[in-house]
Image (cartoon, rainbow, N blue to C red; front, side, top):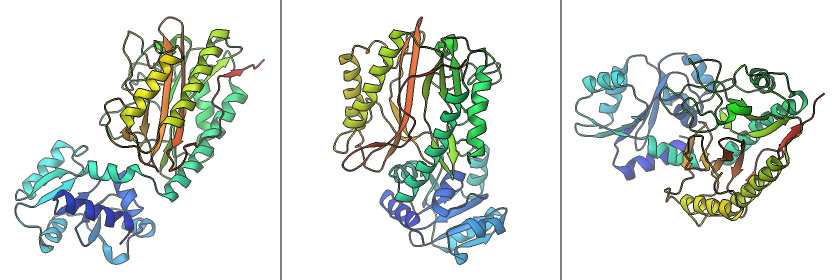
Amino acid sequence: MNRRIRTLQDLLVKSGMAAAVIWYSRDLLYYTGACQPSWLVVLPDTCRLFVRSNYAEAKIQATLDADQMEEERDMGRLLHYLRDHGIIKGSVIGTELDLLPVNLWRQWWDRMPEWTFNDVTPLILGQRQVKEVEEIDRIRRACRVMDLGHDRIRASLKSGMTELDAAAAIEDTHRREGHAGIYFMRHPDFFMARGLCASGPNLIRPSGPAFSLSGVGLDAAVPAGPSRRVIRPGDAVLIDIPVLVEGYHVDMARTYTAGAADLRSRELHRKLERLFAFAADILRPGMTWGQGFRAVEAHADLLGVGHFFQRMAGGGKIHYIGHGIGLELNEPPLVTARNGDPILAGTVIALEMHLLHENEFALKMEDMLLIGEQENAFLCRTPQTLFEVLQP
């Protein structure tokens, strides 16, 4: 039985759950190496993968032993398996209740009324937060794909092209280098283009489900991401387009200008760069995420940009400066003032901060930061600077 499942078994016992039934694709991938439609039943001393379809592929991909898997489309077999292994009336079963559709929940309840269901997602996401060496290696490979896309933007961005042209250029490179063409968010009805791109006045128009600088999209059907707005000389252009490579996400953003930037934008961006350097130094094991957030926020005040720090058009403010990342684009931890959880070595976060004045400018940067035992490291090679792309 693999190490990850053994860890989950220990967590189940400590939490008082008799078993877990895992069905969400990202969690299946984490524990089994495969995400063909399946139910993974985890008991304190054993586990079994019931594959609902594509069994031949699951056998090739899964890291489980052959005797831990079977092809089974009927959930009744899963229920018999649980009962045969001593899961009696009143037992507590864990599953991903944060994602389970109500209609499916009703079907489960009709067939398993003697059991109580608890949400196992906090245990899973807590286990997934600290990345293993192999996971960090995959994230590094995904960073290389991200960097190649930004190389393409620096070579191709110019005034006269549209936001959609810019997004298509970087996405084309990402796909050709191995990006899966999708990303995963653990939220229902999270609609968005394949990434965020905005220019000029679109940078300060909040739109869509992402509480961030988002762009306005092509139309009201998906009101976020690149539009058909033509980029004009001197415009700031935000490129915030994730990649997914070998199952792992990278979320990195840079601000470009089509032509020369004004002196104020250069000065403010240099302060944003100093904020990133400060955050990378201060977010250390031994403190909480909330303490780290407050230290960065205070440093923004010290640099004289506190009024612009994490501001949104209309007077609102974003109350976080980063999020965990891995098999999903947004994972714990969320780096907020209220997060009292300890900072753990091996966590990878997407550190993201911006400076915004509603009527004048918006400058954003995001980068992948690995929290280390002794020191932290940014994982992408694209320089943290304001890129002035001087194309003819």
